[in-house]
Image 1: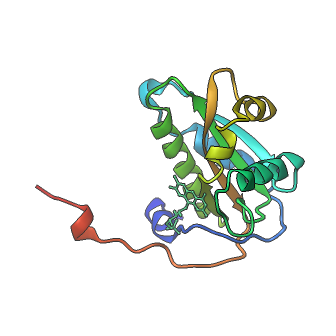
Image 2: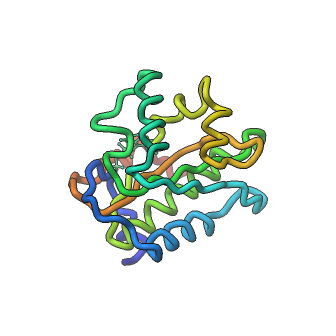
Length: 173
Ligand SMILES: Cc1cc2nc3c(=O)[nH]c(=O)nc-3n(C[C@H](O)[C@H](O)[C@H](O)COP(=O)(O)O)c2cc1C
């Protein structure tokens, strides 16, 4: 699939089949994340891969509910794989770098015929009172904190990509 096709066809998938990703699919997604540009080529993004049925995913979900951030079903929509992106808390570009990397993964997933949804709703749970506990459990490197996540799997829900208002959002001077 061409890149522009993948950009136009991608939408947030909020339902997945039980089919697991293959190792080569997961490798391709992680490569897409690792190949993302980073400010000053710092390559500070760390990727933590979780199985959707694992205890730690359930623990994150319980904590999310505890901090009262709403999400229908559960935060990962029963996807078979969840990738958490963490980065150096002290590096000023890490949020931007994580955003670029997660979109690279989303577009790679679309190009491979998979679905994905970017997940921010667990930020309060992972960076709150239990920040140190989760950082350790999720193998974040020292000084790192959660930035963004993405759930990936085989699509079992469909919706149209979002609309946009070109005139409102663009100024060509
Ligand atoms: C930073 C960020 C955080 C997001 N967090 C969530 C989330 O926690 N749960 C969710 O269902 N969707 C989440 N989304 C997906 C957006 O809701 C979605 O991209 C937006 O509604 C546009 O729809 P589309 O992706 O289908 O085009 C997030 C997207 C971004 C960029």
